[in-house]
Figure 1 (cartoon, rainbow, N blue to C red):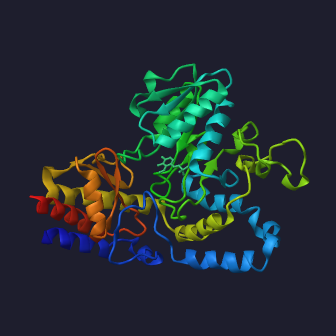
Figure 2: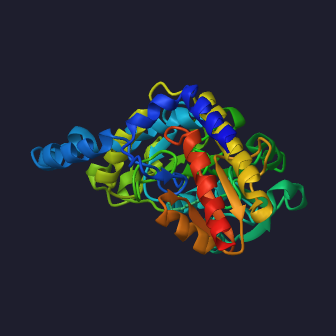
Figure 3: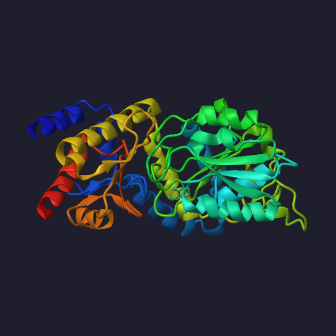
Length: 394
Ligand SMILES: Cc1ncc(COP(=O)(O)O)c(C=O)c1O
C-alpha cells in the first residue's frame, strides 16, 4: 500500500502535464473520473460565458451576429482541427454528434453511388446504430453490423460506407484507424469515424490517413460543457461532392440573401444546418484555450501511464474481485472498464464517497482518465475506495 502511495506521489511530482490541473475548477475533495462523459470546466469558461451574456448579447445585441457570432462555428472548428490532424478549412462545430452522424452517413453514401450497404461497428454507442438505421432507410441502403477486427468478413463491392469508433465507449478498446481506413478504401468504400472517445486523448491524423468524414463530441475530453456542440470533418477534396441531408440556411452559400432554393456553401460551412447555439459554442471556445501549447504526444503518454497505473492498483488492491475489461496493452483509450455483477450499486456507493466514475449496463464500472486534470493520486484513491467498499461487504 505504502509503495503505491510513494509511486503515485513520485509520478505526480514528475508529471510534465501536472501544472494543467490548476487550469480546471475542480473540487479538491472529489476524484473525478468521468471526463469521458462530461469533462471538467476550465477556469476561464465561467467568466467568458458571463462576458458573452453581458457584453456580446446584452450590449451589442443583434449586432453580435455579423460582428462575431455567425462565423464562430468555423472559427472554433479551426481550434479543434489541430487536435484531429486536419489542415484549416475542414472542421466545423455544429449540432450534436447524433445529428452529425446522420449528415456524415447520408453524405458519405452519396459519395459512393451504386453501393448499398452501411457497415456499422456492432458494439457502437447506441445513437450511431439508431441513426445508421434511419440513414439506411432514407438512402435505400441496409445496415450490416460488423466486428471491427473482422472487417474483411463484411467488406465487399456492396459496401458504401463504414462507420467505426476509434475508441469503444464501453470497453475503452482503441481500434487501428490507419489499418481499418486502408481496408475500407481498398474495398472502394468510404470511412466515417466517430471520435467521441478519442479526441483530446491521442494524436489523431485524419488528413494523413485519408479519412472521408469524421464526427465527434466536445463535452468529454474537450471539456466544452454539458451539451456543447459537436464537430464534423470533411476533407477539402470531398467538400464539393459532400451533400448532407439537412440543407438548412446555415449551410447555404449566401444565407442572408434569403434565396428560395438551396445552394450549398463552397467549403466546410455546407455541413452546417441552422442557427448555431452561441452560448454553448462560446463556452467551448473558451474551454479549448487550455490546449494551447499542449503536446498531444505528452497527453497520450500520460493517459497510457495513468490508466496503466490504475490497472496496477486494481490488480494489487482488488485482485480477482473485478475483471479488467479494457485492454492491458497499448490498444486502449483513456478509460478503464471493470466488470462486476453489482457494478451499478458500486458506482453509486463510490460516488457517495466522492469518487465519480460511471456505470454502463449490464455490469461495467467505467473510469475516465483525462490527462489534463487527473492525477496518479486520484487513480490510487479510486482503486482503494473500490477495494474498501468490497472489503466492507465481506
Ligand atoms: C461514441 C459516441 N457517439 C455519440 C455519442 C452521443 O451523441 P450526442 O452528442 O448526440 O448525444 C456518444 C455519447 O456518449 C458516444 O459515446
